[in-house]
Image (tube, rainbow, N blue to C red; front, side, top):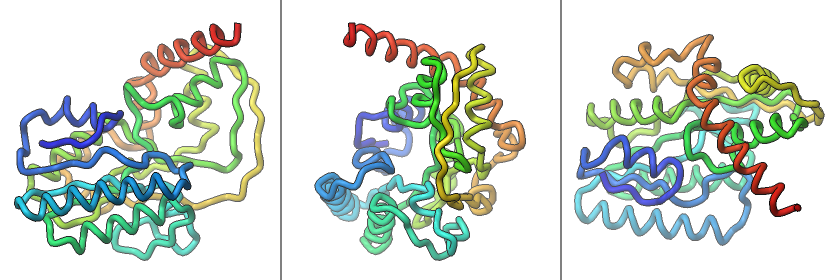
Length: 263
């Protein structure tokens, strides 16, 4: 597999797939956070995607585009959270990703669009949800937006899902890649505190409630052995158990570096 990018998902994809699927190009570069609204960043990603699609079309390759299943895509009241339903993106990031999905679908190249939930695993960027929450818990104080929930998926499970889709020759489809479980932010912090052996002072910020449930009916129908992944009522505990050592070590390194700079 050809992998474009050097970040968190690109690293895990290289480790997992190696030389398999040599006719597939996965784009793991570009805008990767819902907080971005910089037009120039969107333009750079668009140019990259257009160039890769052109090359894949000319050489008969399949392009995989990583989109989003965040509330930026599915958070509107009118959204049903499924790939076949209408979407009304709430953010510039969501609208940008949806536009690039349509570019892929109309390009003439073979394609696969994966709408990703919040992926968790070693090597995540510090600004992402679980690394940020872990640092806050260890620092003794955490700020939470009340009523917020997030769909979390372990990066290892994500890789196995993609492997199954590609191995079966699934192409020219949009697929939600998610757990399908909307975890309350308070429950996520409870789980971190339990595993870190500490309690943090919580500041709750009132926020308008946003729907963001992600439907995974299509994913379950396509991925072989999906029910063996352990994605169910205990999935949050399983995910935190898998990742807490890396999260804690990374958070402590970051906090120590910040303290050294401040000293």
